[in-house]
Each structure stands twice: as structure tokens, then as C-alpha cells.
Length: 439
Length: 161
Image (cartoon, rainbow over all chains, first blue to last red; front, side, top):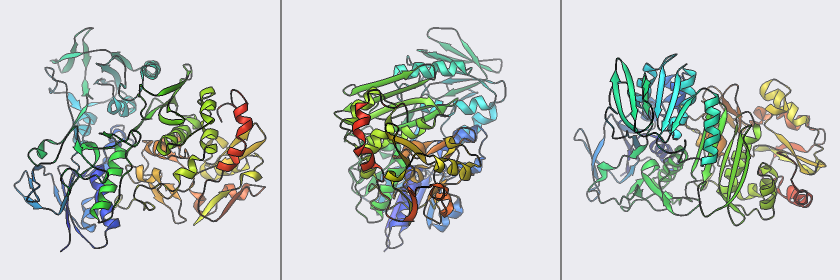
């Protein structure tokens, strides 16, 4: 009898797993997808908000394509209980799905701070398509938008909010913006840049309440003046969706603990993406990387293993890139490692900033900030990522990079990073073109 | 498949490949829009062009959240303009530094082998860029390493690129 794979979650990890099962399997298996939303790409919601793409562009798998792939779907349903001994998954409508193996890819949800009025009218999260629709419906030219939280998610929608003609104020509880993506020096350059582009920023601001006043929101703070807003966006973090695994016997730490095949403590239960605590490529230690590239790679590795291949995963590389008002901000690897040797270069006027982090003659992390129009910013982001990914020993080029952290290309080429990288593939063979999309 | 084979010893640094590339890719003679980039590797006497290897993994392609990077009929990883939203994930995923981003159109772009008739190879007067059947390879590594001495000795380096 054909194997029955149950995929719980239709996000990036889930749809990459499905696609890869179909590409890698020798004989057609049964695939069942449980997803409380119709599959779409969260990564592109900011462009939907900015009206540069239509809503139809966000969907990753149409019902027709899922049908052609032979995927049985339970859309609009949530998993409520997992019985790993019996090999059965229960859904919120009472459906019981037996499985041979199962993927936990339930992702994360947005969380709001525990302050009075945080769930009132005109106060939004920006995480799901439904939430994106609500935000888009309320923002127009001249609206005053207050974004609570200055993390990666907030920054991905900053350009779109400005493009809609809104006025934007960002408030952040930490002493700097992007506290989990760049250091204080980089943050101060980005803050100055944004102020120059008309964005108000208030850091070190603790929100105490959101009140409703004559159709507007009034935000109150522990210190500092109140802020009135038409629209409030709570970009105050995410939490993994793991509650439904309680009692399942699947070991959960910060996420589902997985081995190098993305298997949980229960061998026929895999986990991928935001909910998985897997190997970090640089440190070799378990970590949760709630980012799109990790969800994609996890999903593919799980799909290949479910299809009967034996694929070990080298680990995920933490990486983030965001563009705000034509300034690129990127960091990857262990960019905040206190034990690393540092090299810095700053040009506050451009502005541009680079930080390279080393262990011996190997790069273990980097941070780059520079104008999007500078070609070398984009190219160097890739090459520095390659050096971290390959763990290339840079030998004498390390000193050259100390003299000039902008002279990346010659160091990269001369240290044969390319030779190390060309044989690397995630699944041990060339990746096929994406086939699940645009049906 | 046919790939762009680079023979760096033959490069004179004339930049014709960049001009040709930018013209075919964007319709303007603007090296800044070229997806093949010539860099100095020894003071200002040794140059070599560098572009996408059309690698087996296609890190840009697998990273794209909307499937906007595909494999073209000639085997190139190519950006489908209409589908690209400009999120830049490909630029950080590509470990070779061969993705580009156009701030005007807000789209990523890269070498697509000009659909099987690469302008850079045509334009090169010294046959430093060949379009032929080959395994893609680290074309520049040995060339650059052999010329490392003078670069490393020159304190301060040679600027950004």
C-alpha cells in the first residue's frame, strides 16, 4: 500500500515538502495537507500591502494545482491532537487522519503585548493574509500609522506604508531599532536615515495602553507624550504554534527538537520551519530560525526523506535582508557573537556600514548596510554569505579585509570559495525548477 | 549544458562584455546595469570578468518565495520579471554574489545566458569568455590566487572593486 504522508501547515515548509515528495518519490504516495489557511507566501504580503502586486500573486498553491499533485486537502481546519502511538491526527472538525509519517509545519502566530486596548478596533497585527487585508483597508493617504515594534516584520512593511501616502511613527521598547538583526551602531545609522525620510522613531518606549478617542487610537507610554494614531500595527513578535502537540510525546524545547534528518523524538514525525529547533550551520548547535530560507530548506529535506531518500541537512544559516527607503540592511550567521573577532568600517554620510565577525581566519557572521543603488552592496552581501556558508579559510586575505572591508570580491575569488560552493546542494542533486507555483 | 567559460588570462579589462551585457539585458549601454562584472585582480594590470555560474543548486531559485526564478530552456536560472516582487531574498541566498537588484524597477535580475546567445561572449575581442559545453567551474580562483601577492602587499587595497 502507498505510504500516507500528512503535512500539517501549508506555509513555505509544508508546500516545499509536498513538492519535494512528488519530485523524489519512486512510487506515488498519498499526501494529505491540513492547513487553516489557503497556502500563500507570507514573504510577499508587504508587496500586496504596497499595492505593487495583486492579492492573487500571494498564493503558492491553487486548489487546481494541489489536485493535480494528488494532494488531499483539509483547508480551513486545524490540527488539535496528535496520537503518535496510534499514528493518528485529529482535526478541529473531529476528522481523524491516520498517517505513516507526518510533518509538523504549523509556523508561528503574531503576538501582542499584554497592555490594555491592544486588541481594540483599529489595532492590527501584520502576519496573515487576513490581517494584511484589514491593514490595507484602513490605511490611506494622510493616515497616521503607528507601528509598535521595530523588528524585521515591521521593517518589511515600512516602504509599503509610506508608499500608501501614510505618515509613519515607529515605537520600540528596546533602546534601538532592529534589535535582533543589527547592532547599535548600525541601528543608529538606519534611524537617522529613516528620520531623514520622514519617519518618526521613538526607541526605549514602553507602551502602557491603547485607548479609543473619537475614532482614533491614543497610545500611552510609561514615559513620554501620548501618540494619536489612525491605525496601530502591533509588530511585537511571534510565537510558535505548538500547543496542539501537548501530550503527543513529541519533544519540544524552544521548538520541536529535530535531528539532522528533521525527525523529531518520534521517528515518523518530522518538523520544519518556524516550529523546528534544528542545527545551525555556523554553530552546529540546535536553534530556531524563524525565517523563510530555513522553512524552505527544512521543507525540502523533509520531503526528500519522506519520499524514501536518506538526506542529512547541514544546518540552516540565519540571514535577513530588508530594504527601507532605498537603504539595504542585511545580517547573517552569528552577527552578534560576543566571542568573535570584529572588523568594522563605517561611512556615516553615505551611509554605509560593514561588520565582519571572525573565528580564526573564517568568517562566521556579517552585517552590511548600504544604499540599494550600490551594486557592490548587493553582490558583497551574496559573497559574504558564501564565505560564511562555505566556512572558507581566508588566510592572508583576512588582513586585506581588515584594511578594507569593502574589498570582498578579490578575497572571495582568490580563496577559492567558489570551488567549495559549486558541489554544494541541499538534497545532494541539482534542484529542479519550481513547479508548484503559477498554475 | 553550455556555460560561460571564463579564461581570465585572456581578459584585457576592456569592459566590452559589460557594455554588451547591459545593452542586451536593459537596452542601455551602461556597465552599471551589467550582470557580468570585470574586476582588477593585480593592481590595474590583470582583469577578469565574473558572472553567474548557473550552479546546480540554484540558491536564488530555491530561495524565491514566489517561484519567480526558473530554469530557462538553455539551462540558465532566469528571473521572470512579472513574478518577481523585489523581496531580495535571492540576493542574500546566492553565495556567489551574482544576483543584482534594480532599484528603479524594484526587481532582481541576473545572468540568463541571453537565452542561449550570450552577448558578453560575442563582444569579447580576446575570447576570454567562451560559451561552450562544459562543467561549470571556479574559473577565476587560481588566477586570482596567483596574483594575490601584489594585492596583499599593497596596503589599503584598491578601493571597493
